[in-house]
Image (cartoon, rainbow, N blue to C red; front, side):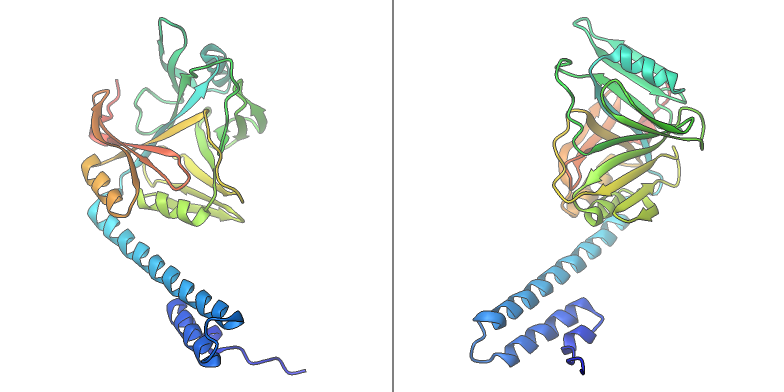
Length: 294
């Protein structure tokens, strides 16, 4: 049996042209019943396709403007903040994995904040973890989209005292954080967002993308597609990235509609700005020249 001929719009490679041909085809086939039944559905689908294609072209155009307006070529992943239920238990766990305590500030009321990693405090070449005591240590921490870490060490898997999953790889320096793993509800949008921050895709698999910077800590950000929205997290708090000019970066990101959580502000002796990605994860940009080793 002969196969029915495909409509002309199936044979066109360019998506906008294909959608426009589909719109004309649907109108010519149903001139007197354009807004009923299958004719209305075909017309609506074609119009929607045109709008989506136009939106996609506008995003790509703005992306080129962003890359021209801000210098993200030397951006680096510096550290990630995790809330912990017991700071001492968490420090003991990570020290056993080969990470060193780089600093520890205790609060008089209990708890505190500590940095752990393989290098030094405020080290541009080694990714660190900031461990901050949870506001209510008696409550279990919600992981949300945080899927744990990959750390250099012996093979296997563990769960830290806060319920965060840890995987291990024999590559890299002992105690190095090789990958920060996050879920995303839209892998394409999330990948686009981090590419705007200067990251490059270094690996892809079914439903997963790994991104990294060319310089600084060789820590990857691994994004995994899920079918639902990313849930709220009381565990993973934010990711910190260095950049050459925080004001220029903020202006460029605002141009393409990125949500600004905190405009450029002087904090801890550094110029810092905060943003939210498409899944609600918080990203802070810090001026690289302000990020000095103590």
